[in-house]
Amino acid sequence: MTRTLHGFGLGLRPQHYDALLSADTNAVDWLEIVSENYLVDGGRPLSMLDRIGERWPLAMHGVSLDIGGSDPLDRDYLRALGKLAKRVRPALVSDHLCWTRHAGVQLHDLLPLPCNEDTLLHVATRVRQVQDALGRQLVLENVSSYLRFTSNTLEEAEFLSALVPDTGCGLLLDINNVYVNAHNHGIDAIRYLDVLPRHAVRQIHLAGHSEDALGSGLLIDTHDAPVCDAVWALYAHAMQRFGGVPTMIERDDHIPPLAELLGELEIARGIAANTRLERAAHRIALLQNLGNELPDLA
Image 1 (tube, helix red, strand yellow):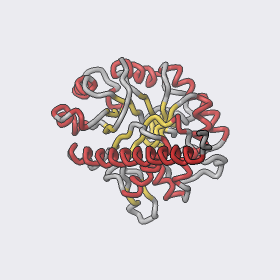
Image 2 (tube, rainbow, N blue to C red):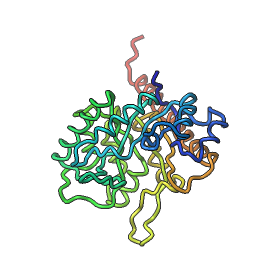
Image 3 (cartoon, rainbow, N blue to C red):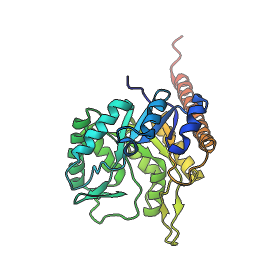
Image 4 (cartoon, rainbow, N blue to C red):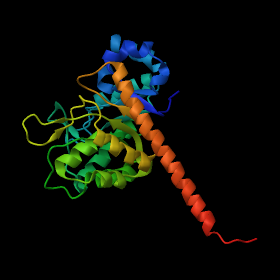
């Protein structure tokens, strides 16, 4: 039976297999796998995944779907993805709003798309095809970018907001990517979050970034550092807007001991708890004000 996500998770990395299996299971609520790491028959990774999947709900997160590309969708890849999903029984299957392949060559990068009506129609068609092939909802993540297209007629948040009702897809909101793009392109990060449809955000990523070593002033989405204070502040706003969305820490390089990532999860838990208290206090104040305004019928 497929389990649902709740609370706070981590990206599963081989460095943490043993530590996770020997750790207190209450320290992590769920785990996210990189789908491509397990599209094989047999081997230690798949064996470990089976053991881990017995203890935690899982999400599958891909990096090579090429949802915005011009090449035909890779049907062999989709079949392998579907096979893995049957084995893992994930709560969510996600990938990125980007393109990754051209002329049959997988570029191994998450390349941004122009945000306009033509791209929206193209991506929507491919999302529906993927969802039909997998027999389930696809969840798409916003990516970081280092350029903007002159053909853009929509902001990315507007593009995603239009894609959701057109296809029924969900959204994976990467808070760090919003912050990086806001810095790199001068967009309003708060407005970006406020434009997204509340009901569509199924999962949240938190990660770190780095400054461009060449001194260009760009921030680079490296996922190799702790979450910074500005991203935590943006996460607090996301919690106010979207409520208790399952949240995870994503680290892909300079991977620290498990305990360090669990410490970051505690920060996320604290922010979410404070937000719940603030929301509850706000509701109580509204009800009190409403009561004061009602006429005395005695």
